[in-house]
Length: 69
Image (cartoon, rainbow, N blue to C red; front, side, top):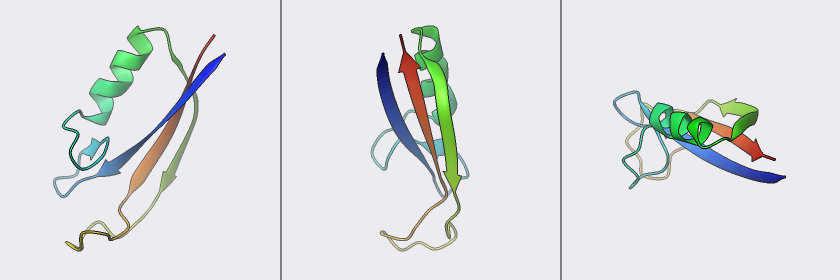
């Protein structure tokens, strides 16, 4: 069994993306993983202060783990 985890952070515009420089949206990435045969194992969310513009401020984030057998 293979397991992969990805963390998506909420940006200033309210969409979740996989990191600062990655332009792929969370929904598109999850759809691609599911179409490749992966299934969602767990998901967790963490709240942060997304309204601040500080570069290292804690942001809202969602961590999703996928598994493939």
